[in-house]
Length: 319
Length: 319
Image (cartoon, rainbow over all chains, first blue to last red; front, side, top):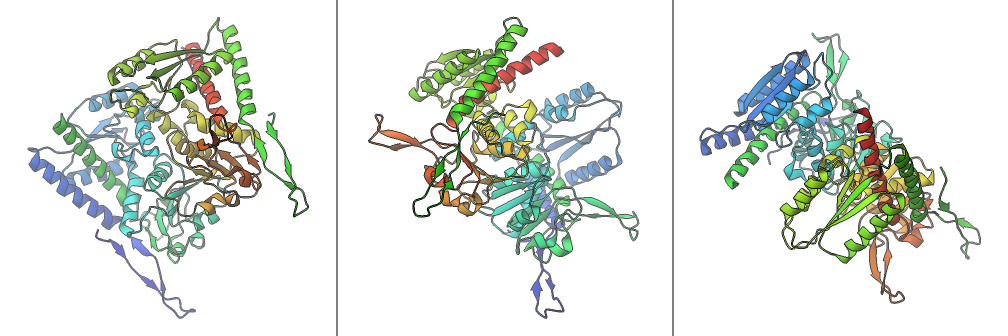
C-alpha cells in the first residue's frame, strides 16, 4: 500500500529538543487514489463486458443551494471515473407519493446500480424521510442508510451490505496510516445514523474494542485519553481538546463547522470537531479539516456504486 | 417499582469485619413479575376488545430434544398469560421452500401477531437460516432477529422495532436494581446477533457510554474493571474473574455452560460466563446462573408478543 501521509516536525523553543508532530492523513490524496483505482476498474468492466458501465441515479426534491453543490461534486466524480450518473429533479411541490413512485421506477430499472435520494428533502409537502430512505431497494442503496443495510452492518454481515460513505471513508483513511485496527481500543464520539453508529459497527467488525461516546457521556476526556483510534462525529466545533488525546493516537475528525472569519471572502471558514493545533502535538496521525474526511465521502459513494455494479455482474454471470 | 433483590452478607473470618456481598438479582422473581403484568394486560385486552387475544406461532423444523424443551416452556408461559400460542411442526424432510411457504402463510394471517422460527433448524435439506430469519414479517418478528429490526435497534428507533429477548431481559434485570443507565459506563462482552450486539445498542440508546469487547480484545481485565454495568455473553465458562470487576458494579451474566458434576442426577450442572463466587464479593448487584437471565428470555418473548398485539390494536383503532 502506498502511504499518502505528510510528515512534519515541531521544535518547541523552550525545550530545545525536536518533538514530532502528527503525520497528516490527506483525504485529498487518498480520495484521489480511490477514484483512480475505481476508474481503472470501470475501464476494465467496460472492455470486458461490451460497453457496460456502473450507473447511479441522484434523486433531488427541490433546489437547495447546498444540495446542488453536493450533487454537482458527485456528478463530476462519477464522470471522471466513468460511472453513468443521472440527476433526476422533482419540483418542491412533489408529494411523498410522487417521490415514492420515482424511487420505485429506479428500483425496478435493471440498468441502474445505485440510487441515492439527496437529503434534506426540500419540499412543500410533508414527506417522511425515514419512509423514503427505506423505499430505496437495499441492493441499490449506495448511501447505506436503509434499515436493512444498517442491520447487516451492525450484525457484522459486511460483505452483503452497503456501508455509509463517511464511516467507510474514515476506515480508508485509517488504513492509510498502516495502523492495524484489530485489538486496538477505538473510541467513537457521536451516534448519528450517517457517522457515529455505523462507524462503531465498522470498527467493531474490524475487531477493535470500541467505546461509543455521546452527549450523555460523563467523562469524555478520560474516554478519549484511552483511544488508540479516535473518530469524532459530534458536530461541535473543536470540542475535543488536544490534551485529552492519547500520545500517538490516530485521530479522525468528521466535523464540518462554519465559524465567522473576516479575512475570508465568504466571511467564514470551516473547522473540525477536534482542536487541531493542540491535538496535532499529541496524535500520531491526524486528519485536517478541510481536506480530511470531507473529500472521502464522495469517493466512497463512487466505491459503493462500483461495488453494486460488480455484484450485478457477478449475479448475471452466475445466473 | 418493587425491587426483587435479595440481600446477603459475608463475614470473612480473618478480617473480622462484615463485608457486604452483592445483591442478587433474581430472574425467577423478575420474570414472574413481568408475566403477571402481561396477564393483567391481556385480560384487559380480552374484555375491552370482545375476546381479542394476542396470538403467537412457534414454527419448528424437526424434533430436537432441546428445541422441544424450549418450545414447551414458551407454550406454557403463553398459556398462563392468556396468549393464544400455536406450535406448528414441519418434518425433518421439509425443504427451504416449504418452510418459506409456512412463514408466508403466517405472515399473511392477520389474526397472528407474533411468529418465531425455533433455531437451530433440524432439517435434512440445506436451509439458509439467514434467509428464513429475514422472511418473517418485521411486524411479527417477536424474536427481533431480522435485519430490519436489528437496523432499527442499532440506529435508535426503539419504539418501532422488536428487541431480541435476551438483551431485553437483561435491561429488565438492570432496571430492577434501581441503578440508572444514563451516563454510566457499560461494558458488553460478546458481539453475537442474539446477545452482545443488540445489548450494546440497547445500553447505548438508554444513554450509557458503551464499550464492546470480544475475543480480540487485548486488555479484557482492564476493560471490565471500568464497567459500572457489565453484561457478559461470551459463551465461555467463568471467563470473567471476580478480581476484574469494579467495586459496586451491576453484573449481568448471560452464560449457560454445562460442566460435569458427578453429584447431580444428570451428571452435569450449569455455570455462567462469570466466576460467581469471586465476582459476588466485588459487584454491587449480580445475576445468578441458573435463575438470572435464563428465565427472562421467555418472559420477554411474551412481552414482545403482547406488544405486537398492542400495535395491531392501535393500528385497527386508527384506521
